[in-house]
Image 1 (spheres, rainbow over the protein chains, first blue to last red):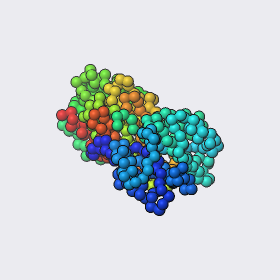
Image 2 (image 1 turned 90 degrees about the horizontal axis):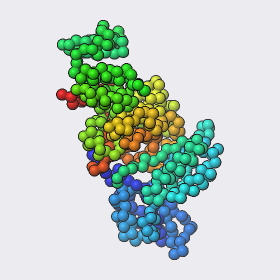
Image 3 (image 1 turned 180 degrees about the horizontal axis):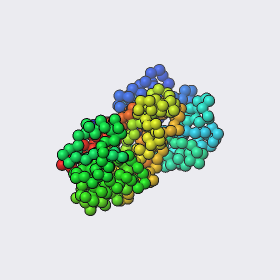
Image 4 (image 1 turned 60 degrees about the horizontal axis):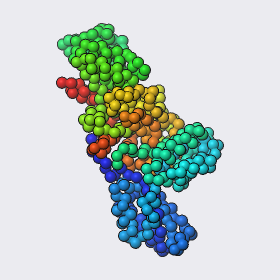
Length: 181
Length: 290
Protein backbone atom coordinates (compact mmCIF):
# COMPACT_ATOMS: atom_id res chain seq x y z
CA UNK A 1 0.00 0.00 0.00
CA UNK A 2 1.44 3.36 -0.92
CA UNK A 3 0.14 6.64 0.27
CA UNK A 4 0.07 8.85 -2.81
CA UNK A 5 -1.76 11.66 -1.04
CA UNK A 6 -2.20 14.54 -3.43
CA UNK A 7 1.26 13.56 -4.50
CA UNK A 8 2.68 16.32 -6.67
CA UNK A 9 3.94 13.59 -8.99
CA UNK A 10 0.40 12.39 -9.52
CA UNK A 11 -1.66 15.54 -9.58
CA UNK A 12 -0.32 17.19 -12.72
CA UNK A 13 -1.96 19.50 -15.19
CA UNK A 14 -1.10 20.52 -18.67
CA UNK A 15 -0.19 24.12 -19.36
CA UNK A 16 0.71 26.12 -22.40
CA UNK A 17 3.28 28.85 -21.89
CA UNK A 18 4.10 31.41 -24.54
CA UNK A 19 7.63 32.69 -24.64
CA UNK A 20 9.52 35.18 -26.76
CA UNK A 21 13.14 34.42 -27.42
CA UNK A 22 15.98 36.40 -28.90
CA UNK A 23 16.92 34.96 -32.28
CA UNK A 24 20.28 33.65 -31.06
CA UNK A 25 21.80 30.19 -30.63
CA UNK A 26 21.22 28.60 -27.24
CA UNK A 27 18.19 30.72 -26.41
CA UNK A 28 15.71 27.88 -26.59
CA UNK A 29 17.80 25.71 -24.31
CA UNK A 30 18.07 28.56 -21.84
CA UNK A 31 14.28 28.70 -21.69
CA UNK A 32 13.68 24.99 -21.47
CA UNK A 33 16.26 24.05 -18.86
CA UNK A 34 14.56 25.83 -15.97
CA UNK A 35 11.27 24.20 -16.91
CA UNK A 36 12.72 20.73 -16.56
CA UNK A 37 14.64 21.71 -13.42
CA UNK A 38 11.45 23.01 -11.80
CA UNK A 39 9.72 19.68 -12.22
CA UNK A 40 7.93 20.43 -15.47
CA UNK A 41 7.53 17.71 -18.05
CA UNK A 42 7.84 19.05 -21.59
CA UNK A 43 5.15 17.77 -23.90
CA UNK A 44 5.72 19.77 -27.04
CA UNK A 45 7.51 22.83 -28.29
CA UNK A 46 6.12 24.86 -31.11
CA UNK A 47 8.91 26.97 -32.48
CA UNK A 48 7.60 29.15 -35.23
CA UNK A 49 10.65 29.58 -37.37
CA UNK A 50 10.67 32.58 -39.61
CA UNK A 51 7.87 34.28 -37.74
CA UNK A 52 9.02 37.21 -35.64
CA UNK A 53 7.12 39.33 -33.18
CA UNK A 54 6.93 43.11 -33.73
CA UNK A 55 9.85 43.38 -31.35
CA UNK A 56 11.90 41.10 -33.60
CA UNK A 57 11.78 38.14 -31.29
CA UNK A 58 10.88 34.48 -31.94
CA UNK A 59 7.57 33.30 -30.50
CA UNK A 60 7.67 29.85 -28.94
CA UNK A 61 4.78 27.95 -27.48
CA UNK A 62 5.63 25.30 -24.92
CA UNK A 63 3.18 22.70 -23.66
CA UNK A 64 4.17 21.18 -20.39
CA UNK A 65 2.83 19.20 -17.53
CA UNK A 66 3.47 20.04 -13.93
CA UNK A 67 1.75 20.01 -10.55
CA UNK A 68 -0.39 23.14 -10.18
CA UNK A 69 1.45 24.00 -6.97
CA UNK A 70 4.76 24.19 -8.83
CA UNK A 71 3.58 26.15 -11.82
CA UNK A 72 4.16 29.68 -10.53
CA UNK A 73 7.70 28.84 -9.42
CA UNK A 74 8.34 27.28 -12.78
CA UNK A 75 7.30 30.43 -14.63
CA UNK A 76 9.42 32.50 -12.25
CA UNK A 77 12.48 30.36 -12.89
CA UNK A 78 12.07 30.78 -16.64
CA UNK A 79 11.88 34.53 -16.14
CA UNK A 80 14.95 34.45 -13.90
CA UNK A 81 16.83 32.79 -16.74
CA UNK A 82 16.18 35.97 -18.69
CA UNK A 83 13.42 34.66 -20.92
CA UNK A 84 10.33 36.70 -21.73
CA UNK A 85 7.20 34.88 -20.63
CA UNK A 86 4.31 36.47 -22.44
CA UNK A 87 1.25 36.72 -20.33
CA UNK A 88 -1.30 39.48 -20.04
CA UNK A 89 -2.92 37.84 -17.06
CA UNK A 90 -3.51 34.55 -15.42
CA UNK A 91 -6.13 33.70 -18.03
CA UNK A 92 -3.38 33.58 -20.61
CA UNK A 93 -2.54 30.20 -19.16
CA UNK A 94 -4.67 27.65 -20.80
CA UNK A 95 -5.16 24.06 -19.94
CA UNK A 96 -4.57 21.66 -22.80
CA UNK A 97 -6.64 18.51 -22.89
CA UNK A 98 -6.05 15.66 -25.30
CA UNK A 99 -8.79 13.48 -26.65
CA UNK A 100 -8.55 10.62 -29.13
CA UNK A 101 -11.29 9.96 -31.66
CA UNK A 102 -11.63 6.59 -33.36
CA UNK A 103 -13.76 5.68 -36.35
CA UNK A 104 -14.48 6.72 -39.90
CA UNK A 105 -12.91 10.11 -39.39
CA UNK A 106 -12.29 11.05 -42.97
CA UNK A 107 -15.63 9.84 -44.30
CA UNK A 108 -17.43 11.78 -41.58
CA UNK A 109 -15.77 15.04 -42.64
CA UNK A 110 -12.84 15.68 -40.36
CA UNK A 111 -12.69 19.38 -41.09
CA UNK A 112 -16.34 19.74 -40.13
CA UNK A 113 -15.56 17.88 -36.91
CA UNK A 114 -12.78 20.35 -36.14
CA UNK A 115 -14.94 23.36 -36.99
CA UNK A 116 -17.62 22.10 -34.65
CA UNK A 117 -15.07 21.79 -31.85
CA UNK A 118 -13.73 25.26 -32.61
CA UNK A 119 -17.25 26.62 -32.28
CA UNK A 120 -17.21 25.74 -28.60
CA UNK A 121 -16.61 29.18 -27.03
CA UNK A 122 -14.29 27.95 -24.30
CA UNK A 123 -12.04 25.75 -26.42
CA UNK A 124 -9.79 25.96 -29.41
CA UNK A 125 -8.03 23.23 -31.32
CA UNK A 126 -4.28 23.37 -30.73
CA UNK A 127 -3.36 20.58 -33.08
CA UNK A 128 -4.48 17.35 -34.60
CA UNK A 129 -2.60 14.15 -35.36
CA UNK A 130 -4.23 11.65 -37.65
CA UNK A 131 -3.19 8.02 -37.62
CA UNK A 132 -4.77 6.18 -40.52
CA UNK A 133 -3.01 2.86 -41.12
CA UNK A 134 -3.55 1.46 -44.58
CA UNK A 135 -5.60 -1.61 -45.25
CA UNK A 136 -7.53 -1.61 -42.03
CA UNK A 137 -11.15 -1.15 -43.02
CA UNK A 138 -10.89 2.61 -42.92
CA UNK A 139 -10.95 2.96 -39.14
CA UNK A 140 -8.53 5.66 -38.18
CA UNK A 141 -7.65 7.54 -35.03
CA UNK A 142 -7.06 11.20 -34.39
CA UNK A 143 -5.60 12.88 -31.38
CA UNK A 144 -6.95 16.36 -30.89
CA UNK A 145 -5.46 18.69 -28.36
CA UNK A 146 -7.80 21.38 -27.16
CA UNK A 147 -6.76 24.50 -25.33
CA UNK A 148 -9.46 25.26 -22.84
CA UNK A 149 -9.95 28.08 -20.42
CA UNK A 150 -9.17 27.08 -16.87
CA UNK A 151 -11.83 24.80 -15.46
CA UNK A 152 -13.76 24.55 -18.72
CA UNK A 153 -12.48 21.12 -19.77
CA UNK A 154 -15.86 19.56 -19.00
CA UNK A 155 -17.66 21.86 -21.41
CA UNK A 156 -15.14 21.19 -24.15
CA UNK A 157 -15.30 17.44 -23.62
CA UNK A 158 -19.05 17.38 -23.73
CA UNK A 159 -18.89 19.16 -27.09
CA UNK A 160 -16.48 16.48 -28.28
CA UNK A 161 -18.84 13.76 -27.06
CA UNK A 162 -21.78 15.35 -28.80
CA UNK A 163 -20.05 15.63 -32.17
CA UNK A 164 -18.57 12.13 -31.86
CA UNK A 165 -21.91 10.60 -31.03
CA UNK A 166 -23.53 12.23 -34.02
CA UNK A 167 -20.82 10.90 -36.34
CA UNK A 168 -20.67 7.50 -34.68
CA UNK A 169 -17.08 8.05 -33.58
CA UNK A 170 -15.57 6.55 -30.49
CA UNK A 171 -14.00 8.97 -28.01
CA UNK A 172 -11.20 8.21 -25.62
CA UNK A 173 -11.40 11.03 -23.14
CA UNK A 174 -8.75 12.11 -20.69
CA UNK A 175 -9.31 11.18 -17.09
CA UNK A 176 -9.94 14.59 -15.59
CA UNK A 177 -9.85 14.49 -11.86
CA UNK A 178 -12.80 16.12 -10.21
CA UNK A 179 -13.29 17.15 -6.67
CA UNK A 180 -11.04 19.31 -4.53
CA UNK A 181 -7.55 20.07 -5.72
CA UNK B 1 -15.01 -25.82 7.64
CA UNK B 2 -18.23 -27.74 8.25
CA UNK B 3 -19.57 -27.90 4.73
CA UNK B 4 -18.62 -27.43 1.07
CA UNK B 5 -21.01 -27.36 -1.86
CA UNK B 6 -20.62 -27.02 -5.59
CA UNK B 7 -23.46 -26.77 -8.11
CA UNK B 8 -24.42 -30.46 -7.91
CA UNK B 9 -23.05 -31.94 -4.72
CA UNK B 10 -22.13 -31.25 -1.13
CA UNK B 11 -20.30 -32.55 1.90
CA UNK B 12 -21.17 -31.77 5.51
CA UNK B 13 -19.30 -32.74 8.66
CA UNK B 14 -20.00 -30.97 11.93
CA UNK B 15 -16.56 -32.05 13.15
CA UNK B 16 -14.82 -30.52 10.17
CA UNK B 17 -14.80 -31.52 6.51
CA UNK B 18 -11.70 -33.27 5.20
CA UNK B 19 -11.00 -30.49 2.71
CA UNK B 20 -8.17 -32.33 0.94
CA UNK B 21 -10.37 -35.35 0.35
CA UNK B 22 -13.22 -33.18 -0.93
CA UNK B 23 -10.91 -31.47 -3.43
CA UNK B 24 -9.41 -34.78 -4.55
CA UNK B 25 -12.89 -36.07 -5.15
CA UNK B 26 -13.83 -32.89 -7.02
CA UNK B 27 -10.81 -33.29 -9.30
CA UNK B 28 -11.40 -36.99 -9.79
CA UNK B 29 -15.17 -37.28 -10.03
CA UNK B 30 -16.39 -33.72 -10.36
CA UNK B 31 -18.29 -33.75 -7.07
CA UNK B 32 -17.23 -32.69 -3.58
CA UNK B 33 -19.26 -35.35 -1.75
CA UNK B 34 -22.38 -37.49 -1.72
CA UNK B 35 -24.70 -34.98 -0.10
CA UNK B 36 -27.04 -32.56 -1.82
CA UNK B 37 -25.84 -28.92 -2.08
CA UNK B 38 -28.97 -27.96 -0.12
CA UNK B 39 -27.74 -30.00 2.83
CA UNK B 40 -24.77 -27.67 3.16
CA UNK B 41 -26.99 -24.58 3.26
CA UNK B 42 -29.08 -26.28 5.96
CA UNK B 43 -26.07 -27.29 8.05
CA UNK B 44 -24.96 -25.67 11.30
CA UNK B 45 -22.35 -23.02 10.53
CA UNK B 46 -21.37 -19.48 11.56
CA UNK B 47 -20.35 -17.96 8.24
CA UNK B 48 -21.58 -18.69 4.74
CA UNK B 49 -18.96 -17.97 2.08
CA UNK B 50 -21.02 -17.30 -1.04
CA UNK B 51 -18.75 -17.89 -4.03
CA UNK B 52 -21.14 -19.03 -6.75
CA UNK B 53 -20.67 -17.35 -10.16
CA UNK B 54 -21.84 -13.75 -10.42
CA UNK B 55 -25.27 -13.48 -11.98
CA UNK B 56 -27.11 -10.34 -13.02
CA UNK B 57 -30.68 -9.19 -12.48
CA UNK B 58 -32.13 -11.09 -9.52
CA UNK B 59 -28.58 -12.28 -8.66
CA UNK B 60 -29.85 -15.81 -8.05
CA UNK B 61 -28.98 -18.31 -6.77
CA UNK B 62 -26.43 -16.27 -4.80
CA UNK B 63 -28.97 -13.85 -3.36
CA UNK B 64 -31.20 -16.70 -2.14
CA UNK B 65 -28.21 -18.29 -0.39
CA UNK B 66 -27.53 -14.99 1.40
CA UNK B 67 -31.19 -14.72 2.38
CA UNK B 68 -31.21 -18.22 3.86
CA UNK B 69 -28.10 -17.50 5.91
CA UNK B 70 -29.29 -14.12 7.17
CA UNK B 71 -32.75 -15.46 8.01
CA UNK B 72 -30.93 -17.87 10.31
CA UNK B 73 -28.84 -15.03 11.80
CA UNK B 74 -25.67 -16.30 10.13
CA UNK B 75 -22.95 -14.14 8.64
CA UNK B 76 -22.33 -13.96 4.91
CA UNK B 77 -19.00 -13.35 3.20
CA UNK B 78 -19.44 -12.71 -0.51
CA UNK B 79 -17.07 -13.42 -3.36
CA UNK B 80 -20.04 -13.22 -5.72
CA UNK B 81 -20.63 -9.68 -6.98
CA UNK B 82 -24.25 -10.18 -8.01
CA UNK B 83 -26.06 -9.59 -4.70
CA UNK B 84 -24.13 -6.38 -3.84
CA UNK B 85 -24.06 -5.01 -7.39
CA UNK B 86 -27.64 -5.81 -8.38
CA UNK B 87 -29.63 -5.97 -5.12
CA UNK B 88 -27.68 -3.91 -2.62
CA UNK B 89 -30.69 -2.48 -0.86
CA UNK B 90 -32.52 -5.80 -0.60
CA UNK B 91 -29.42 -7.40 0.84
CA UNK B 92 -28.84 -4.63 3.38
CA UNK B 93 -32.51 -4.86 4.41
CA UNK B 94 -32.09 -8.57 5.12
CA UNK B 95 -28.94 -7.79 7.07
CA UNK B 96 -30.78 -5.20 9.20
CA UNK B 97 -33.34 -7.80 10.24
CA UNK B 98 -30.63 -10.32 11.05
CA UNK B 99 -27.96 -10.80 13.69
CA UNK B 100 -25.72 -11.84 10.83
CA UNK B 101 -23.54 -9.42 8.89
CA UNK B 102 -22.65 -9.22 5.20
CA UNK B 103 -19.05 -8.58 4.17
CA UNK B 104 -18.00 -8.34 0.54
CA UNK B 105 -14.33 -7.34 0.37
CA UNK B 106 -13.57 -10.10 -2.15
CA UNK B 107 -15.99 -8.66 -4.71
CA UNK B 108 -13.83 -5.63 -5.54
CA UNK B 109 -10.14 -5.65 -6.35
CA UNK B 110 -9.23 -9.22 -5.38
CA UNK B 111 -6.48 -9.12 -2.81
CA UNK B 112 -6.48 -5.30 -2.72
CA UNK B 113 -8.44 -4.20 0.35
CA UNK B 114 -10.61 -1.65 -1.46
CA UNK B 115 -13.90 -2.02 0.40
CA UNK B 116 -12.33 -2.11 3.85
CA UNK B 117 -10.12 0.89 3.04
CA UNK B 118 -13.10 2.93 1.85
CA UNK B 119 -14.91 1.95 5.05
CA UNK B 120 -11.83 2.86 7.10
CA UNK B 121 -11.87 6.39 5.69
CA UNK B 122 -15.60 6.61 6.27
CA UNK B 123 -17.79 6.63 3.20
CA UNK B 124 -18.80 10.25 3.84
CA UNK B 125 -15.24 11.43 3.31
CA UNK B 126 -14.64 9.53 0.08
CA UNK B 127 -15.59 11.57 -2.98
CA UNK B 128 -14.63 9.03 -5.63
CA UNK B 129 -12.93 5.73 -6.26
CA UNK B 130 -11.23 5.44 -9.64
CA UNK B 131 -8.90 2.90 -11.08
CA UNK B 132 -7.96 -0.07 -13.13
CA UNK B 133 -10.20 -2.85 -11.89
CA UNK B 134 -9.92 -5.50 -14.56
CA UNK B 135 -6.62 -7.29 -15.07
CA UNK B 136 -7.59 -8.94 -18.35
CA UNK B 137 -8.51 -5.68 -20.06
CA UNK B 138 -5.40 -4.05 -18.64
CA UNK B 139 -3.21 -6.89 -19.86
CA UNK B 140 -4.65 -6.58 -23.36
CA UNK B 141 -4.21 -2.78 -23.50
CA UNK B 142 -0.70 -2.97 -22.00
CA UNK B 143 0.45 -5.58 -24.52
CA UNK B 144 -1.12 -3.74 -27.45
CA UNK B 145 0.65 -0.56 -26.35
CA UNK B 146 4.03 -2.14 -25.62
CA UNK B 147 4.23 -4.44 -28.63
CA UNK B 148 2.20 -2.59 -31.22
CA UNK B 149 0.03 -5.66 -31.69
CA UNK B 150 -3.65 -5.74 -32.61
CA UNK B 151 -6.50 -6.51 -30.25
CA UNK B 152 -7.33 -9.96 -31.63
CA UNK B 153 -3.71 -11.07 -31.53
CA UNK B 154 -3.18 -10.00 -27.93
CA UNK B 155 -6.53 -11.44 -26.84
CA UNK B 156 -5.60 -14.85 -28.28
CA UNK B 157 -2.29 -14.65 -26.46
CA UNK B 158 -4.08 -13.74 -23.22
CA UNK B 159 -6.40 -16.72 -23.68
CA UNK B 160 -3.40 -19.03 -24.18
CA UNK B 161 -1.88 -17.69 -20.97
CA UNK B 162 -5.14 -18.17 -19.09
CA UNK B 163 -5.34 -14.42 -18.47
CA UNK B 164 -8.52 -14.15 -20.56
CA UNK B 165 -11.53 -16.46 -20.53
CA UNK B 166 -12.57 -18.29 -23.72
CA UNK B 167 -15.49 -15.84 -23.73
CA UNK B 168 -13.77 -12.62 -22.68
CA UNK B 169 -16.81 -10.33 -22.97
CA UNK B 170 -17.28 -9.82 -19.23
CA UNK B 171 -13.76 -8.42 -18.98
CA UNK B 172 -13.14 -6.64 -22.27
CA UNK B 173 -16.61 -5.10 -22.51
CA UNK B 174 -16.10 -3.46 -19.14
CA UNK B 175 -18.91 -5.32 -17.35
CA UNK B 176 -16.72 -6.80 -14.64
CA UNK B 177 -15.18 -3.40 -13.85
CA UNK B 178 -18.65 -1.82 -13.94
CA UNK B 179 -19.99 -4.35 -11.42
CA UNK B 180 -17.11 -3.55 -9.08
CA UNK B 181 -17.72 0.17 -9.45
CA UNK B 182 -21.45 -0.33 -8.92
CA UNK B 183 -20.66 -2.07 -5.64
CA UNK B 184 -18.40 0.82 -4.64
CA UNK B 185 -21.02 3.42 -5.60
CA UNK B 186 -23.55 1.58 -3.44
CA UNK B 187 -21.04 1.54 -0.62
CA UNK B 188 -20.55 5.31 -0.99
CA UNK B 189 -24.28 6.09 -0.99
CA UNK B 190 -25.29 3.40 1.48
CA UNK B 191 -27.73 2.24 -1.18
CA UNK B 192 -29.54 5.57 -1.42
CA UNK B 193 -29.61 6.08 -4.31
CA UNK B 194 -29.10 2.45 -5.18
CA UNK B 195 -27.12 1.58 -8.29
CA UNK B 196 -27.21 -1.51 -10.47
CA UNK B 197 -25.27 -2.41 -13.59
CA UNK B 198 -28.07 -0.90 -15.69
CA UNK B 199 -27.28 2.53 -14.25
CA UNK B 200 -23.62 2.35 -15.22
CA UNK B 201 -22.19 4.05 -18.30
CA UNK B 202 -20.03 1.28 -19.74
CA UNK B 203 -17.68 1.12 -22.70
CA UNK B 204 -15.21 -1.67 -23.34
CA UNK B 205 -11.93 -1.95 -25.21
CA UNK B 206 -12.86 -4.30 -28.06
CA UNK B 207 -12.78 -1.78 -30.88
CA UNK B 208 -9.76 0.26 -29.85
CA UNK B 209 -7.26 0.19 -32.70
CA UNK B 210 -3.52 0.25 -32.26
CA UNK B 211 -3.49 3.59 -34.07
CA UNK B 212 -5.27 5.20 -31.10
CA UNK B 213 -2.75 3.76 -28.63
CA UNK B 214 0.12 5.06 -30.78
CA UNK B 215 -1.33 8.56 -30.78
CA UNK B 216 -1.74 8.44 -27.01
CA UNK B 217 1.86 7.31 -26.57
CA UNK B 218 3.18 10.11 -28.79
CA UNK B 219 1.49 12.52 -26.41
CA UNK B 220 3.06 10.97 -23.29
CA UNK B 221 -0.17 9.19 -22.44
CA UNK B 222 -1.57 5.72 -22.34
CA UNK B 223 -5.05 4.26 -22.67
CA UNK B 224 -6.46 2.43 -19.65
CA UNK B 225 -9.86 0.94 -18.97
CA UNK B 226 -10.78 3.15 -16.03
CA UNK B 227 -13.66 2.54 -13.67
CA UNK B 228 -15.08 5.43 -11.70
CA UNK B 229 -17.46 5.22 -8.76
CA UNK B 230 -18.91 8.27 -7.06
CA UNK B 231 -22.13 8.92 -5.18
CA UNK B 232 -23.42 10.31 -8.50
CA UNK B 233 -22.92 7.11 -10.45
CA UNK B 234 -20.66 4.74 -12.29
CA UNK B 235 -18.66 5.14 -15.45
CA UNK B 236 -16.31 2.66 -17.08
CA UNK B 237 -14.47 3.25 -20.31
CA UNK B 238 -11.10 3.59 -21.99
CA UNK B 239 -9.44 6.83 -20.91
CA UNK B 240 -6.24 8.72 -21.52
CA UNK B 241 -3.98 8.89 -18.49
CA UNK B 242 -0.43 10.18 -18.22
CA UNK B 243 2.11 7.47 -18.97
CA UNK B 244 3.65 8.17 -15.56
CA UNK B 245 0.37 8.53 -13.72
CA UNK B 246 -0.09 6.26 -10.74
CA UNK B 247 -3.08 4.70 -12.49
CA UNK B 248 -0.96 3.63 -15.47
CA UNK B 249 -0.18 0.15 -14.12
CA UNK B 250 0.75 -2.52 -16.63
CA UNK B 251 0.00 -6.19 -17.14
CA UNK B 252 -2.73 -7.79 -15.08
CA UNK B 253 -2.10 -5.48 -12.14
CA UNK B 254 -5.00 -3.50 -10.69
CA UNK B 255 -4.94 -0.16 -8.93
CA UNK B 256 -7.52 1.97 -7.20
CA UNK B 257 -7.28 5.58 -6.17
CA UNK B 258 -9.51 6.52 -3.28
CA UNK B 259 -10.14 10.26 -3.39
CA UNK B 260 -11.13 11.86 -0.11
CA UNK B 261 -12.47 15.23 0.95
CA UNK B 262 -10.06 15.79 3.81
CA UNK B 263 -7.09 13.51 3.32
CA UNK B 264 -6.23 13.71 -0.37
CA UNK B 265 -5.76 10.58 -2.43
CA UNK B 266 -4.73 7.11 -1.47
CA UNK B 267 -3.68 4.66 -4.18
CA UNK B 268 -3.50 0.93 -3.60
CA UNK B 269 -2.18 -1.43 -6.20
CA UNK B 270 -1.99 -5.20 -6.34
CA UNK B 271 -3.41 -8.37 -7.77
CA UNK B 272 -7.02 -7.88 -8.63
CA UNK B 273 -8.07 -11.41 -9.45
CA UNK B 274 -7.17 -15.07 -9.07
CA UNK B 275 -7.96 -17.94 -6.75
CA UNK B 276 -5.43 -17.31 -3.97
CA UNK B 277 -6.08 -13.55 -4.14
CA UNK B 278 -9.84 -13.94 -3.81
CA UNK B 279 -9.37 -16.51 -1.03
CA UNK B 280 -7.15 -14.04 0.82
CA UNK B 281 -9.87 -11.41 0.66
CA UNK B 282 -12.56 -13.91 1.74
CA UNK B 283 -10.51 -15.08 4.73
CA UNK B 284 -9.76 -11.48 5.70
CA UNK B 285 -13.52 -10.88 5.89
CA UNK B 286 -14.04 -14.08 7.87
CA UNK B 287 -11.37 -12.88 10.31
CA UNK B 288 -13.18 -9.59 10.66
CA UNK B 289 -16.24 -11.46 11.96
CA UNK B 290 -14.42 -13.00 14.89
